[in-house]
Image 1 (cartoon, rainbow, N blue to C red):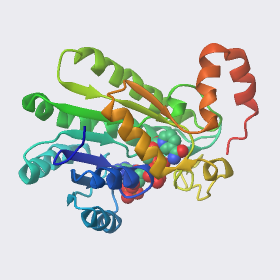
Image 2 (cartoon, helix red, strand yellow):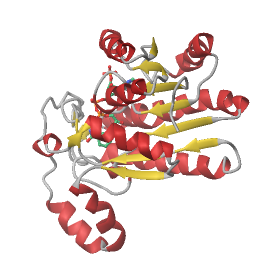
Image 3 (spheres, rainbow, N blue to C red):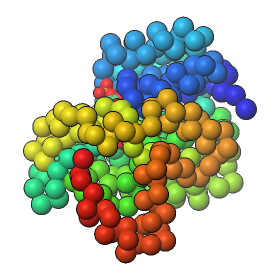
Image 4 (cartoon, protein in one colour):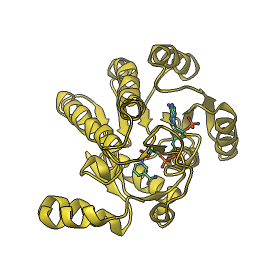
Length: 264
Ligand SMILES: NC(=O)c1ccc[n+]([C@@H]2O[C@H](COP(=O)([O-])OP(=O)(O)OC[C@H]3O[C@@H](n4cnc5c(N)ncnc54)[C@H](OP(=O)(O)O)[C@@H]3O)[C@@H](O)[C@H]2O)c1
């Protein structure tokens, strides 16, 4: 199965996993809608995708501007007439202990990672049901499956996605609607650089753990593979993914190890 001529909308397409996904879909000549806040960077990604033979619509947006989402759906429909795939990838991480983190930081992370994500899904869903087909891919995290130091808001936002999308998987069990939850482990992107400190300032550093992660390109290939196989939930990463099994089967060991892991 290929995504040739399918309309694929990717949020957070200006860098990291989102950009790598755009290039992966461009190789299959999908029609791409590229969204994030930075329009100029998105245009650069579009130029690379077009060089691979893909038609692109650059659609800059902040996923927390909820009132614009319906308008944006209509812009996509005017250009491409349908929306086959939505990859809800835009997100931001955190570096800060629960005790010290400003409530505004908790709120901001939830607004982007959870409400921004589900609001776009709710705006696109009626069109997918009308078409009679659709594929929605929320990019969660391995930390959507367990707790992790200095990430209380981030983990919470990703856990919330699981409740929402698993419910959709049940509600649309008999519809031609694929919902594939993706849980990346450590992927070498700017996610740590763009993380929020306890006071909401930018963390600004590439963490050593992050730098050792698998590449965004490898991650994108694995995500596309999971989408083609319509997997309900997929963990993507390197050796760190053992933590998912430890949390499930040997929780006492998981808590011992996780409590000792350096937050970075
Ligand atoms: N890298 C990892 O190790 C890892 C692990 C688990 C999960 N993830 C998840 O993977 C997703 C992509 O992250 P990444 O690793 O590729 O990091 P990244 O390079 O920092 O990319 C984040 C993307 O989200 C966009 N974004 C942030 N806030 C936004 C907003 N309010 N509205 C619209 N777009 C926004 C950014 O673009 P603009 O700045 O241009 O808006 C950027 O394109 C995130 O959901 C993250 O939680 C990553």
